Amino acid sequence: MKKTILEKIYYNCQLGMYFDDIKKLSKGFVVYSNYVKDKSWNYYVGFTAKNILDFQKNLGEAEMFLESKKRQLCFALSPLTKINKKVYSYVTANYQKYEEEIILLCRKIAKTQKLSEDYSFKRIDNKTQKDLFIKTFKICKTQTSDGDTYPALSEDYFFALEHSFNHVGDWEFSHYLSFYKNKPIGMVSVCSKGKFCGIYGAGTVVQHRKKGVFSNLFKHIYDEQLLLGRKYFFCSTKRNSANHRFYNKLGFKDQYVVELWEQKIFKNL
Image 1 (cartoon, rainbow, N blue to C red):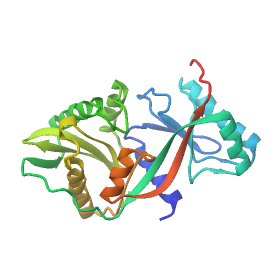
Image 2 (cartoon, helix red, strand yellow; image 1 turned 180 degrees about the vertical axis):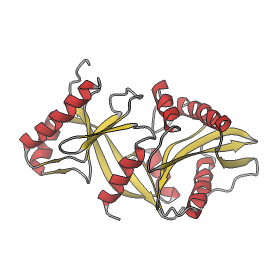
Image 3 (tube, rainbow, N blue to C red; image 1 turned 120 degrees about the vertical axis):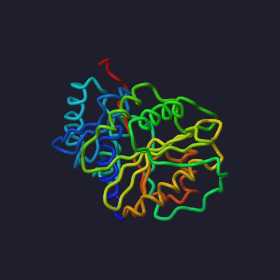
Image 4 (cartoon, rainbow, N blue to C red; image 1 turned 180 degrees about the horizontal axis):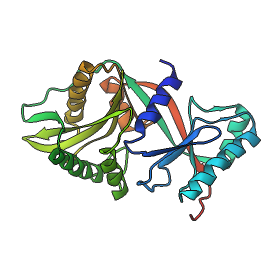
């Protein structure tokens, strides 16, 4: 599969999950959230630049739009971004890279750890379970332990999650829970279309981590989504993180790296 094909799918399927809007510009587009106010929760992506002036013009248009939303400019360099070495040197001199994100693809899941019958997994399908999912998400995403790839999330992210349940579009959103003795202990959100299935927002409560809970939850999702015609399962995480190593062991293979950049000096918006 071409990297650019997977990247287009990756950004498109995020719309409605956590990013809830998109702005098409002269070159490329901005994906952003009206709920999450974190400075990095918007990206200018998919643009091209033949020279430095072209790059400045493109980023200027993105910056003006984001300022109207009271947001800071962040941009992603990826397979969809077409810039030459001279422009890239300008980027490294005038902006700061704050993260590298790896996009991974799974076509065959690795063997998972066997769990006791006390554990079970289910796709939610009603209002009560929706509320239970959000509650479980909050617990999982506000608990942290040593070695976690991501810090605890702020309340903004939970508003974005609630909004995703009302999403109407080409991509189908579904949400799964894992249980221990009928008590919810973990969750993951899935966005799917055609042969593709994206994995987002996975989490497990601290006391049940590193026991194979998520691996088995993903196996449950994998088997169910295969029957629905899915063929490619993908996710993203920070490069060289504990999550990155975990997904590799689970059967995901690295596809490409996205460099995330931001302004060196932020404005007070």
